[in-house]
Length: 137
Image (cartoon, rainbow, N blue to C red; front, side):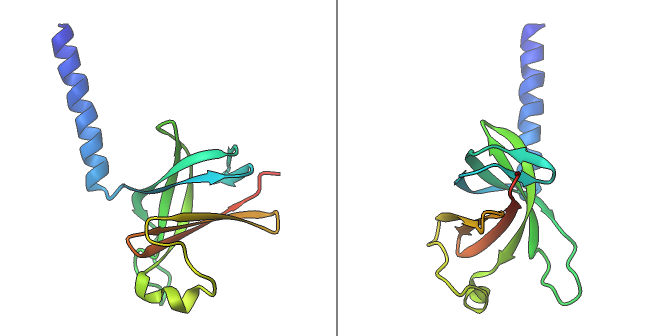
């Protein structure tokens, strides 16, 4: 009986991982958030978070490129602590958008903007993901 339960649990776990992989979920980096922020009404305490694309994108508005805004999950200790929308800027569009240098490939940068927002800027494979989180205070 115990083996049967273990086999069932393993099958479910593998199925969840497979579903997540098929849905487009992928890690895009790890960042240190220096102050408390809000992500979809969830308060995130200062700390280190892993960022993962959820595989869900927002429907494009007129004139917008499909998948230019995607949901990103912020994880800590393997648990999703919050979700936020990331603006996706493709590598060939970056020079039209960014006035300052973007993080190098595979790197991330976190900026506190006028003490009201935290901007997370991740460069994954040449494409950049911009996430703006309001201060929790």
